[in-house]
Length: 234
Ligand code: ADE
Image (cartoon, rainbow, N blue to C red; front, side, top):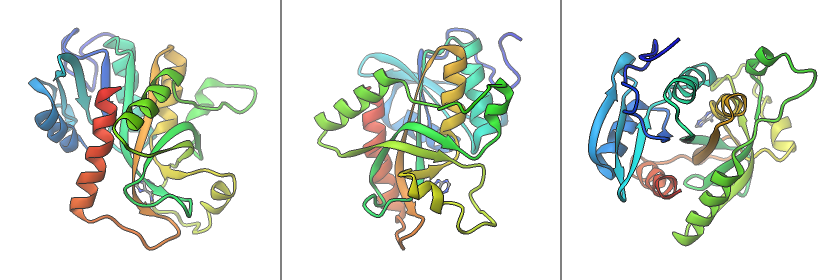
């Protein structure tokens, strides 16, 4: 396989070494237009928009990942393997499992547990622990402190389901101290591990699994902006 890939039509060199990945491609467009200078759109295949521009003089790319581990699995693999991307920072949303973590809070996934079968491809004789890159994680925490923002760092759950037939499915993860549930980080962390690259997942809490908390559109935007500003400064 070479470039262009089946899912990305950028030419080699059009994508920066550092890529921010929101799930929603329209959010990638919004972030690029709001925060970057001199933006160039490098991908429109399946409307999975990707942009490269500069932020504080440094080249950075922003591309949608789509929803779920298969989707981010495809895009992150192609970015790392064929476009020589070094670091991918997922910027997403999550549902809180913890009583002291509320909507608008920023969670950083040090580890990503999963109920997905994605790991089976590696044929490991045990259980693999998908983890964030420490350098990116440490920098994210430092940047957040400098910006006066609180972060919660720990285990998250990458789930294959948003709607589950089993309404108690999250209880055992909560019992194990898992902070929040999202749907992509574990695949990203595994691809980074396989290809010796760097990955981090940052999340804004958009809903609560156990408490009646939801974000208005304005709060959602503000919460997301707080996280984006950290990710861009890493
Ligand atoms: N992303 C945001 N909220 C979520 C939830 N409740 N479950 C899975 N992914 C999410």
